[in-house]
Image (cartoon, rainbow, N blue to C red; front, side, top):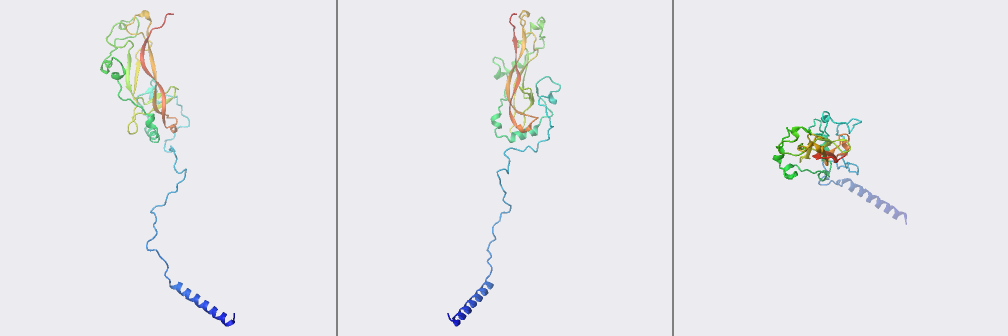
Length: 253
């Protein structure tokens, strides 16, 4: 290539570069007609551990380091029974919290609120049962009151359709019973029949039989809460409650 041709090519390239630079200088910068959409809030960052499967129970009040489940609660301090029908220290908040976070609570819960002698005692109605008067009965084999009296059972008893708030389970530990809490309201009605004169002579029987009235019990299942361990939530526990008062005649010795 001759020197003249090389000089011509160099000049042509230089002129093209100058024209390109001038064009870039006056070209307007691109600006979109509409601003890019942005969410008004930051997107949450999810992870496999961002939400616990169960409540942390951090909102529960602090419990003592040691809680004796066999110690009688305040409501039973002045009673010889194994349950409480009133309880000033009933943990309403804790029980409601446990129910709210239990997806199986309806499967655990069972209630028959309408109970009376009309449907639980054959041959005796509710009004008839409530009119039984055992004021004459002394429970002594040789007492006149053991031989006479009006209508009633051979072993006098006190019948109640109650909703215990606390009770001692079959293992001897006290539990809170789910009663009158949450919405819809959870209740658990139990029929109890307690001997008025346990071990006393049976009514209208001759002393020669050496009869005596014995207390019978039935094991009931109730939806419960452990006041010593709130993290257990609500669960089914078993309780021995008085169910009948029966006359027993011992065998000959």
